Amino acid sequence: MSPYEEGAMMKDFSLFLCTIILSLTTGVGAENDLWRDPQPISRSLPAITADHPGNVFAAGEPMTIKVPRDLPEQAVRWQTVDDSGAAIGQGEVVRGEAAVANLGSLGIGWYRLDFLDASGKVLARTTVGVLSPLSVPTPQDSPICVDSATSWFAPSDAPRQERFAYLAALAGVNWIRDRMSWGELETSPGVFAQNTTYDSAATLQAKYGLKVLQVFHLTAEWATDRQLDGERPSGRFPRDLRQFYNFLKVMAQRYEGRVLAWEPWNEANIPMFGGHTIDEMCTLQKAAYLAFKAAKPDLTVCWNVYAESGTPLHVQGVLDNEAWPYFETYNIHTYTKPDDYLNAFAPARQAACGR
Image 1 (cartoon, rainbow, N blue to C red):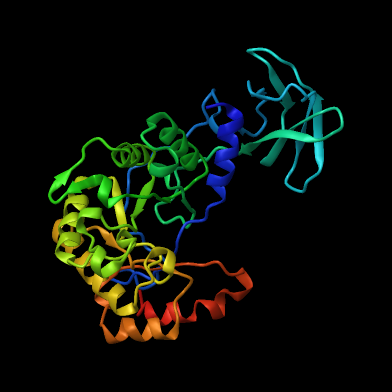
Image 2 (tube, rainbow, N blue to C red):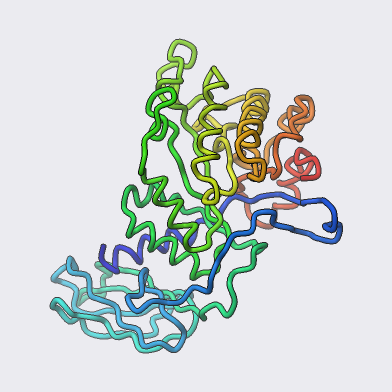
């Protein structure tokens, strides 16, 4: 992958803010803690490497970016643009195998590198980052997290998965959210694929000291019921939760030490992910919690995350089903403006039941 392609991908990667986890942990000695992470992981101090994956440099370091091989012939010059949109540097495009754009030394921040034709039209672009290297490893309780979906954005591509993990560690990320497919892992009842994209991604993310939050949102085809659930039954919860329970127990054991927290479904309250009722969500949550804890009691079991923060009916459903003992963090995805958070999160704060 060219630096141009990788830089563009990592811009999108870095802008995904992970799941908001509403969690207050209580326990002996934790009365004064606003946040106490029960899942420590070994991590070292990341260092910026000489090949600069993702076009990330250290502050004060001279910056040279390889000119993309597939750059259109019409591109004759480049310009550097800062995060305010101001052009702060430019130069002529040089061609050839070793052609680079010399950006000089830039201050800490995010930049865009545009390649333009003679009229000034942007024909291609990539992104550049300048960081101050971390002086200490990322704290275990840092709130800095990202949603990367590494297993899906770099499927069965270990070198690219490692670049993603490296960049996340370099940025000081604590938790990283990945993706998983039930049907790709358990291909038929009790039969499990080995050495998958999910295995390499989990191993590499743990190698870089990243705490992995894993999620999936499709039922394996062999566990679906087309007669009851229509033409897209995999989008619905399995009818036999014993199959779900068995799968999660195996996954908890398989990814011990590499996946530290689990969301047993994604946004099940909206049609895209099944349009389930709160009673169905509570039932699934209980099966998931029992499975994970039966396999690995120390795992963090999250609520099967909402799209938005839920409604008063969702709150009532959690209370009526007495679901609060079956999650340790109450997870939501927000798509609202920060100014609205206080009011928008009110249902979630109530349904979290002190979590």
